[in-house]
Image 1 (cartoon, rainbow, N blue to C red):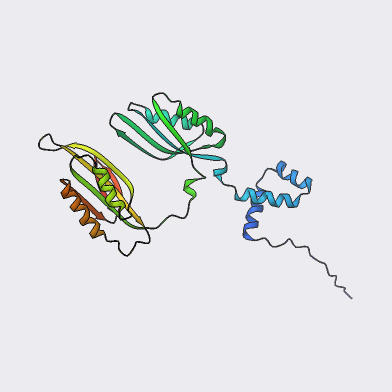
Image 2: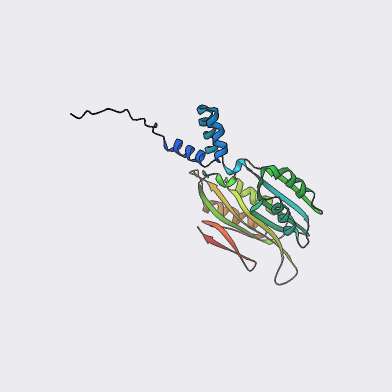
Amino acid sequence: QKHSHSHTALHAPRLSPTAAKRMSALRALPRSLTSVFRDAGAAKSLSSLSSKLYFSSASHDKTYLIVNSLGIDRTGIVSDLSKLVTDAGGNVGESQAAKVGNHFSLTMLVSVPSDKSKSLQVSLQNLSGMNTHCIETDGDPNAIKVRPSIAYSGRFVLEGVDDPGLVHKVTSALAKHNLSIDTMETADEIAPHGGTQLFKIDGICTAIAPLPKSFDSDEIREELSELGNSLNCDITLEDNVTKKKRDNWIWTEEAA
């Protein structure tokens, strides 16, 4: 007669997907490090550490800086600034540069190993001929997933005789309707016929959802047109424009 023997199997507790990922992170640790935890027999501490390891991100090892540098325009400014970042083991992400008068301005998002952040900031601020300011941001700006929904976007353009207060008057008219300025460029130009100094504003404005029921882009357009007439210039507002690209010094728009 065969006797059946009942054996009680020892099963590891079923892990949730999150816990499984944590344990995977632990398995990836060097053997010498994990053995320290095993020898200590601190399962509870190990579980706590696994949580910290799993939820840590690259931003814990990196510092993100907004760097703005301004100085008299010369050849090699961008090269000099970016070399300091590279030498510190950092990287330049988004950036914007502009020449204003005889000055050059550069704003850039920089990521750098946290232990090199302070020394990099000192090096940037000590760059000869440049006035540089650095601001640390909270975590990785690119990790932000929730972004406000844009309910309206438009391109506003002013062209006309230069007159004090044009920028203030146009942007105030937009702000009155809760329109934010995303991008804006201004420039002085000489009229094609004659020596008259012309002024131009070219920008993108947006409004975040939800729009109030009273929002009416036609009404805003009419208001801007009347403002332009009073200032001896033309002001236009084109709906549904979200991007601009440079094409041989001429700004052109692309509908979203």
